Image (cartoon, rainbow, N blue to C red; front, side):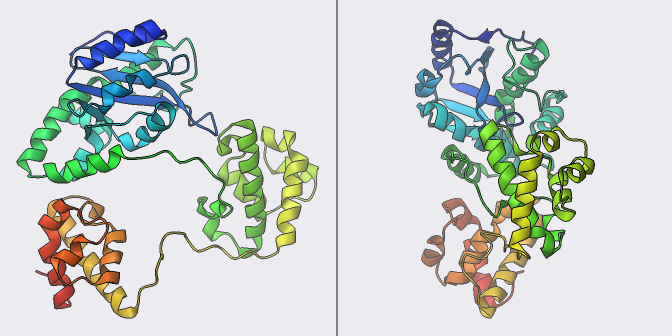
Length: 380
């Protein structure tokens, strides 16, 4: 199965040739590399394609890939991704791509209950191939593209088509095709959302919830300053100030430039000292700031009876996921169980109207869920 690493496609004429070759292929594997570790507003910097016959690398920094859209919108052609929900929103946003027929090897592995669903683990299991991940955090804006990075990128799609064949057969044997295809359809609709500033985002920093309330104001204003600086300079926030340093400054806020620079050796403390001190002064003026409650957990409060239903449903779900050998959310994520507890359906028709109760989930679990709701205890 060895192939040579292809040259990078950089001209419109070569892109047209690629389009013609992709249109001849019944299955096309796709992946992309982005500048997430180097830009605040990340973008696609390299796109990899594989067919059963060849691999291709395309330079989206020099080319508009929108002419390839018709290739992937064709419902007769299968597009294979691994964890495509990371890539699809950017293809849709940057090039207007839609995906008529998707197969995602990561989602398929999750449906099948693989203990390791990452691409490296799957390739080692099925092809005895070890991926070298040393370029995982590389700067994909570099041109000319170094040979090692090109080979690393090519390997991300090289085995996706035969891997899809293996996983498809396993899904069929396990009678899980309907479940997997439902997941593929959901993933194909993933959309890009513009990055917006969340003033409460500081609470999600690792260790932030363990900070004393007296430090929250400092952390809030430092976080806001860092986010603005990252956006202005188009750099990831961690390249402005790493999270541990942000928490350290909030925990023991220095009051002058000398104390600030003695906190740690970091170029931002040297270059932006006055602005950081101003953010700290603003934080001091806020006083004690309560820690915000996590968003999205309690869209609607449960009554005591509903909470009891939710706990029973969750116990049933956890047992069923253990029996299947899959993660719990493959049976039913908590958001679905909460809605079931809130609505307390008594018939299949009512249960089917709960968001997330797709046909495959209804066919497999509806009877058990209704028994759980009716009996007051999880079914045996």
